[in-house]
Image 1 (spheres, rainbow, N blue to C red):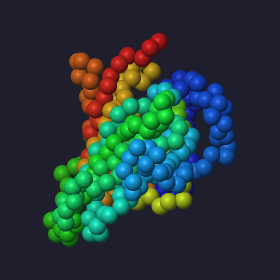
Image 2: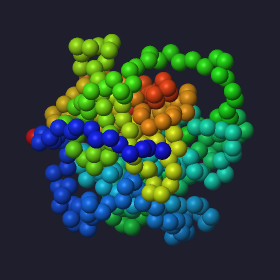
Image 3: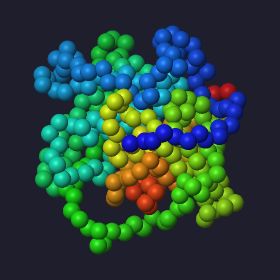
Length: 316
C-alpha cells in the first residue's frame, strides 16, 4: 500500500537513543544492510504445529524479521513491527467471512520480541454474523527450544452497512502533510532500523503554536511481509506505535518510557499513504504513564489509540 517515499532531510544522530551494539550484532548475525529485503518480515513458509506441541491442523506462519524491525531501547524489535505482523495474522485468519471489517485492534507486548525467527497463529474466538472476534499470538523460541508467546493481539470485526448519511467525527481537523515542514525531534532523538524505515513530517500544533506539542504525518514504503499486499488497517498498525515517540513529554536520553500495549479503535477504515498522529503523553507520579492519540488519513479522522507506559530513568 505504501508508495516510494520522497527524501526527508534528516539531521545527524550524534546524540540519538539507539542500541550501541547494533553494528556488532549485525555482523554476528551475518546480515548485510546493503542487501536486506525491503520489507519488515520475510515469510519462511509454515511450521509443523505438532513439532511445537500444538494441535494438528493449526496454521503456523514463520517469519524472519529484517533490519527494518530493529528498535532503540535494546536488542529487540521496535513495538511497531510486532503490532504489524500480528495485525497481518488477524486480517488473514482462516475462516473470516466477507462483509465485515476490523474496528478495534488490541496488542499486548508480553516481552522483548527478538530479531530471530518469529511465528504467528490466529483463530476466531467468537464467531458471529454481526460481531466477530479474532485472536493471534506471536511466538519466539526461548533458550530451551520452546516456542512461547512474546506478543498477542485481538481484533473486533463488525458487519458493514452504509451509513454515509449520518457519518461524523468529533475529532478536530488537522493540517495535512503538505503543511508540514520537517521531521521533528523523532529523527533526532531515535536511532534504529525501524525509525529509518518510515518517512515523517511534522508541524507545530495550530492550537498550541508556542507549545511543545507537534502534529506528525508518517508513511512507509515497506510492506509488512515481503511480496504480500498490505491493507489499510495493517498499514496503519505498522506505524501507530510511533505515537509513543512523537507524543513524548520526556527526553528519551534521560527517561525510558516503553509501552506495553497498543489499542487502536477505528470508526473508519484508513486510506492512502499518509497517517496523521496527534499524540500526547501523560506521566503519573509512580513510574507509569499513558499516551493517547488521534489518528488521521488525508481525508480526516479515522480513530484513536492508547498506550500504557513503563517510565524509568535511563542508566547513565
